[in-house]
Length: 137
Image 1 (tube, rainbow, N blue to C red):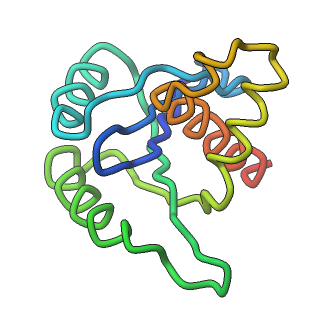
Image 2: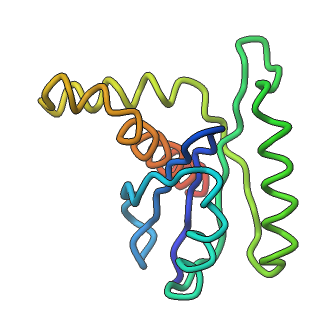
């Protein structure tokens, strides 16, 4: 069974998470500098069977999309051009950074590790992916 790839898109860094082949477990994969994102995704897709991708949808409190959405739409358009056979889905990413920080804190990580933004980004991607998987059930 193919994997699902999740993306927590950011201006500087992008968190990546992926399912196992049975699509049961969401796991943090990596944090990539956003300018290198297409290079990373191209290599990952060439080495792994990916069924679909999920991209975080930044929502504000009153149901408005966040300011990053314009950049995310550009990313999605370019992704669809390069990989037209892989569908792209969206998942609300509200509060995922706070949830990721809390999960890292609860894991007992030291202060320096808890402040590592790249760790927060990939854990956020994992939360986005887990939420998406729960909506598919």
